[in-house]
Image (cartoon, rainbow, N blue to C red):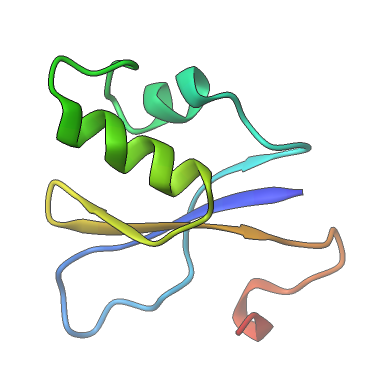
Length: 81
């Protein structure tokens, strides 16, 4: 399973803020929809950020850091690294 996590720009927010979970890798369009963005975006920087996130790079969108990780069904969120 693939999980999308976010961390807001708060010093005390945990790194495991779960945004969405998919059974398999989402499409670029679906990922953009979850982020409330269009794909392709109206400008190249937003499109590039969505593609980087889809490629499992950590990106900052609207002052929020996002990352996609592979998780296993039996993983407890508090135990993830």
